[in-house]
Image (cartoon, rainbow, N blue to C red):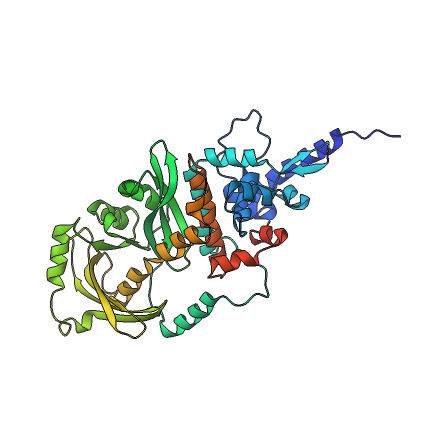
Length: 432
């Protein structure tokens, strides 16, 4: 009886890997998805000695697992990945065991060790690059399988709103900048506080940086924005980031525009804006935009008036605005009023009152479409990961999952996660 040798399968597998890497170098999408190509650029924090699984295999499995409901921890991600088919594992370059003749999935301990030691900036850069490629049409959009489930309520609402509240013509691409604390986390420099840039239109995260706490947000604005291709975009930031340095960075190095909120941290500019915008509604009738909204148990009326400004008030300033929000119940009795002042580098031919009203409203997508979803749908605050880079790594994969569903046309992330069951369908989302 002939004796089979394990040498031949090993040689064949090494040859396959060599061919795979050669094809990947020449045309990444020929043998791997654009996401896998991006993740392959993340540096491996492990030493060469004893390394049994390629980093891209671990990252691809974690990214795909996070799409599925319930996979909100490292243990759940590993358990789901362990059920991947041999065909999929072969395609992503998993380790081949010649003795068993099977491709192997990394252990839970390996997943945990790798996620704990990753370069968070490199991972965010890879994920943000993939999302940007899809938005710009460089890479194909993720595709979700057709399901027989009911139409999402949010999709019906979006269709109605598109008719009742059409967006102003001539809007520029825009992104909102804001931060979020990961509760319970502890690092050598403090807690994990992530500052993200989220696209207004798609609700996807374009970039993310980490600081120790909210007081350090301004320290990462420059590297965060510099990592984006923001030329021609509108960047909306809250009052914490309203500084002359940030205004010069956005309009100078980045060749972009800003919409900033003025509060007590800029007292001179705030008083100047208040003086420029004081007057009756009749006096500002030609420089006012009004928008009303109804839903989620309340009504809102937003009145925004503008006045011209220049560099003497703030770097590259062209307009100041006053936004008044009146909110109340569905009976149209408004019981609460709020007035905020802001400043923008956009001249009147680029942004009228209706445009600025839209940009200011869409800034809150960072709370509604990112922070709330990660907290509630992905149960981020219940995570048991506390130290080093693991909390940030899983937050990045959650950002990727949210962006994937949004780019595929889904509005309700929880609904979409419940629709995705088959592992083959999950890997197919990213073309694997």
